[in-house]
Image (tube, rainbow, N blue to C red):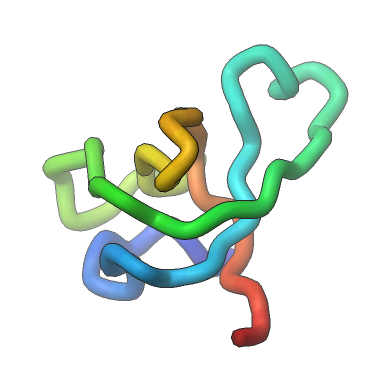
Length: 65
């Protein structure tokens, strides 16, 4: 799964994230990474990021740019 390695994520990357409120449904939200919030090099459920619009979620996929 993409999004588990911190080295793969960087500001400006277009991603699909799962927000905390959507964890039960699995609904994905698309956006551009502003900040990386997970400090660890690996996270099993996805690296937590803040999107440019302020939403916070865990990366599930990279989007084609």
